Length: 255
Length: 255
DNA sequence: CGCCTTCTTGAAGGATCTCAAGAAGGGTGG
DNA sequence: CCACCCTTCTTGAGATCCTTCAAGAAGGCG
Image (tube, rainbow over all chains, first blue to last red; front, side, top):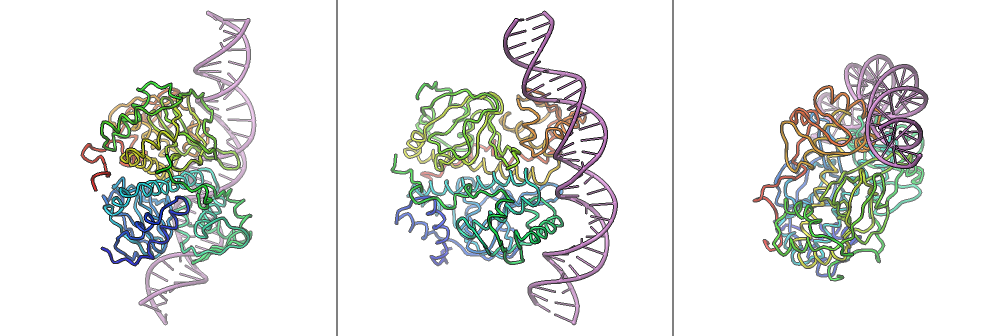
């Protein structure tokens, strides 16, 4: 424990600050969180379904998927997490893992003990609030995924997912030509969109031919953002990615 | 404001207490929350997408759906809420409504000002914690819905939904023959399972013929719970409906 | 260079949708 | 209490999107 260099937690702090107002002291409390760093190979679970955990996993690099599964063994990715995300922040108040977490590509995580998170949250109520707020964004994304998987066809689904990841990785709304790193296999895209890998392959070809998106092995190129967003019916509002400074919230001490 | 009789908030308090430990004072703070009661007719929105709200809606009776929509106008229900639920509790920390809320059957709601909720949460950190914890259960349910809609066929999907609602309305795991009130139309079931009303109809007939579930206009009868749960691959763990007393959490002052 | 993963392509099958129309049910006013 | 209307349920037939199965090509890594 404790073998952390401070910059590790900066992306997470930035994420918090994009939606919540935090004092210098509170920010420092985040940066001072202890943790154990760990490298996870692609396709390896680092949290199993039902685990009773005593720490939360901060993603320092790489991509992580939250997995559900039906009894046929068909896997479903219910969320994709990137650098700065904490896929199981909710475990602070609910330690029984409700889904498995798996690295989609090689990833670095930081396991931060609940006890440290709780101490920080107890000392600074604004942190509790900020943690809770971040969890609600996660829930909003999940609700969007239900719509995506439930009410859109293959082309729209893939387009929507690409737009979501593009926006999140790009940190803010986009326009024109966009290129962003996104190292997932077509099989993983299939798990995320509830399609088969075969159909994802055909869908990606169709998007490529239509000059809408070129999904490579390591990165995605989107020649015309607006066109792809139109196909995917993508409206970035639910991501709360770019809350204007004057709209960032702080409830504690404003009552 | 304030025209509330206390018993209104008891179901919500019971829900909180099933997962969190609260002192007498904290419980009283919940029961003392002010609010404006309102009756909502079936199929009426009472929160619109994007609304900036200054209150949260407590469900006193009836069924409420959280709706998403694609641009074809195809609606998708992303969550169903029952008595004692607060579909937009997260609005306390994130006031921009991320989904529309609509009554599925005639419902009574209580609009409780954020300012009162924030005051209670600021005074009693254990309440913040309990609110946050309740929101995480919502997120777990959403993740299950992604799996349901994405990786199960029509029969399994409907079976899973019926089991979920049966468990929640019945307050705890079930066995043997179960009957519970559940006043939804087949079109609403279709919106929740991402099927068409026509196919829901055929699926319900098939479940009825197989003696698995009899879905009526006002209630559902499940002759053999275990059989239906097997079809729907239903595992109630994610609902956190029956956390054993010794596992209920209280973080504040335990650090 | 060789192996293993990932991508690609084809053909056939199936679950679900769409469209259309009629039957049943529940509520309301005369 | 009946007649009427509107919603909901039911049924049929054809269309379609996506899956399944299978096999070969391409790509990355030791």
